[in-house]
Image (cartoon, rainbow, N blue to C red; front, side):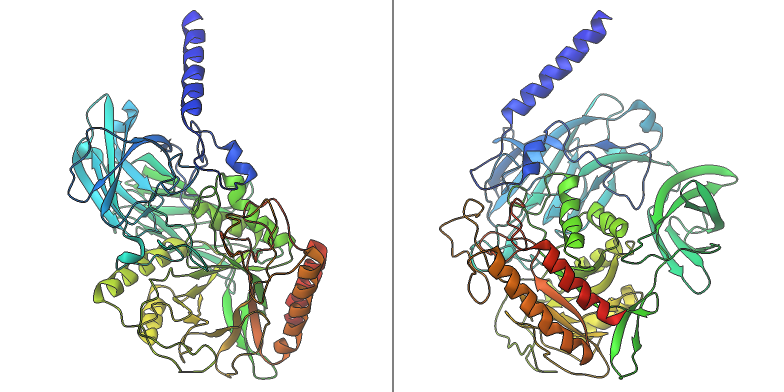
Length: 606
């Protein structure tokens, strides 16, 4: 009893010591969730809801870090501690430093592996690291990855010590816009529409054991609403076992099926319940891999029964459809930035809050703007019934190119290095492969506003080759091309009917951006702090302007418009055009009035 009490006291002391040593960097505004961040229990939720295993070890927390020049070997001394998984530039990292293209960022920590795992394979998983990561375990290079937005895993079993402490080192190089890779809104010169760079680890890092033989690597569920079948393809070694799929409605099993590894298993579900934005019903999945009758691997997952498509209405307009019914996709441009965590929400509750708030505003869609979120964000969208347009993060706006946003087949491509194009295809493919599990994702957006737009027709055809189950919006507000499913223009601040084309779904991909700076809730009071068309004086004026703009959309629906995206969910750094301040503490419009007009617009196509 005394030993147990002493252990509890020592553990509590260690926790208090770690918490006391770490503090939020800088003096910028922060969200209320920032105060809930505990360095001993950072983002504790299982990070991959689409493929859940029972045993795992979270490696989030305080790591050692160092910044060196490009030629330096692994440092023997470190600059201090950093709170993973928050980017080094963020306040929640406890560091708040920028790195340049001429520097390396090093991470180091120790971990132990449960003894029962050593008879299996041990996988090291990263949610995302920006941009190039080299991973060392016990001084052995176990793998490398490029790309700032997608998860990756590696088998580290052969590098592990047979017992005792293991050493993990991550070496990161991130040139931001000075490299030849997608960067989204990051820029080393702040202001206007460009934000603080994000470097290094920015999503959860964790360990898990898998079968020493074959194991389930990925799950790709689909559905056929006409036959009431859920189709599940499981990635594992082909012809090396049988995959059994069980479908549950709560505690009740409603279907089961099986197929060899790599072959889709079809499961019939009687009286299938469809998923939509008002009733986002999800089925639970239990997936088991067997060989010679023995269970090798077992995971839990989920899916939904839904279909995205298009149809021509009685007036000849092409409309997007959800479960064969026309739907007006209406929602905000969502940057997914945080004043305290930059790319990373402080907590899972915070991550879900933006989506809940968007639902409260009466929207049914989010355009995830040139950023990719952690898996749990998409999981929350699946649960809440939120449609998602997934953008591909753009590269730097390099010249020469010309932009003609309201002219079909106008404008020209950007001249880009072949290295950028290779990085683009690699990462866009990984983004599609990662996010196509989530039924909330309904539109792929390869380009935004002609930024690093190249070979549009080829990119669209390539995107179709990765996934034909969603609609493709080739270039939101960019140089419009006759390919894909959607033609999309941008117009600020008022909405307009930018183009007409009988063979494409017509969408207003951005408009609005009504500004209202709120004293005490600004990222930097000395910045321009702007909105499109000038800033308004108070909540009533902002709301009145929003409602006036929204009413302009109603006649456009009759002319063929099938969706619209308002800029934007939150303020971001110098942009003060959000429905809510950057710190999520002040809502800047009358929610009831906004919801009423939003629901009226969405109801035009019911």
